[in-house]
Image (tube, rainbow, N blue to C red):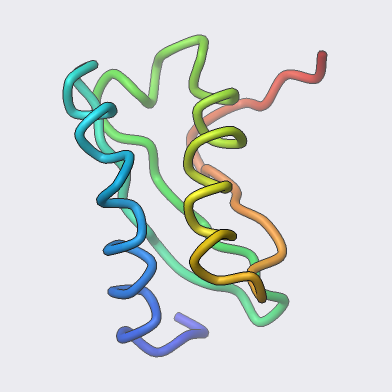
Length: 86
């Protein structure tokens, strides 16, 4: 991993505000790594990994929560979700 674990732990904590909504829908999220170019890689778990709304959840919920807490983060990518462009 390219970032120290304390930053990953802090980002995990920043997701606690949206985690109850993910869990209520049968899913969750886990931070896998932070790249050198400040991209957070996450894994959408459970129902969130298969839900057609995952791409919207990723951008509107997850990325927003992380970037509000850590403005230096450039983006969030889910390793197991295909993003659809509207």
